[in-house]
Length: 450
Image (tube, rainbow, N blue to C red):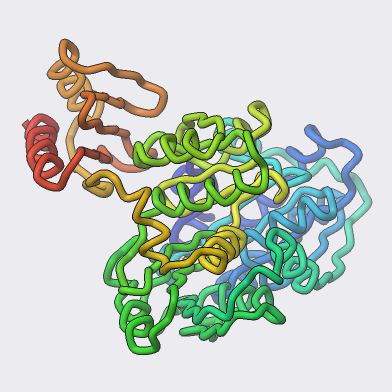
């Protein structure tokens, strides 16, 4: 059997196939998830299931479905889906769901993202740890065996995404989308169909071996082909999707990558133009320009831990209309509080269509600070290193431990968080200008590696 300890992570299940995740373990996880659903939602009779384009997904999803039906619940097989399409289906049908995907990881990986009815999150603290402890429990379905049916929700999903903007406000912008042979190749053309936009899709073929480049737009090398195409075609914007197409990163008309923080600020301002005074959540590694932009556009900014399960729960308690993460996840209350890169992309295209300038013009007011980007440090004792950094700034800056260590020094700040799976510390630092950012980065890095 695979290795449960290796694949049960903070927000999902993910690992190498078959070393960490194989069909036997997938079947056990299907049973454990079904038992979790029975405990949380005893009236639920079915679970929706989808998968991305990875070849291993067919057998793994089949084994997972066997685990569900052995427990007596029915499976609704959606086939090939993006992760945000699975969340839409969960909300639309009000049933729990699972999608087999390893997101941006290399071809040898696969995994499972799970949700309860209405796309409610399942993370380590909200079900995954409980499932891991329950893997070896006997089936509780009795003699009844569930059935499997199929359902195609692509058109319904596309209609839902398009409903977030007024199509009559969209200008005939030239849009290049790099879907990296991931699920964007299925959902992006479906959503853009009928919109007054000039769309070109790069690497649209669904291919889980990723023959052109990895489906990880966080890495600059994976944006090069899109940047070249934006310049070659004179496009107004480039969109880069990850493997399961739930995240999007922007490239402006000058082929410059746009950070998730700037995108969050722009989408927040657009959402607030539709919903004045709304609450908007941002995670704590977003640029300081994000809460500033929210306040300037009449919204209420709420700071959050990193991670979708925390953000979705906070959206519910705070009644937030929108939430954004620096990592390219964007959440919408009217999308069952789930994240969707496609919805975020349409909000950006609406803002660009109704402005008088380019995307870089539109973003310029939010581009106020210099950031280090996320830097990983391999350390023998992450807790000791973080404590050493905390002591160094204890007398001169304000600190909090909402998620790792955040130190605010007034004109600059940083967050230092431990990895959930490796002996790593992740540093994000921001300062007023590039020189100050470089200097402060060297200062904090020296303390971490001391």
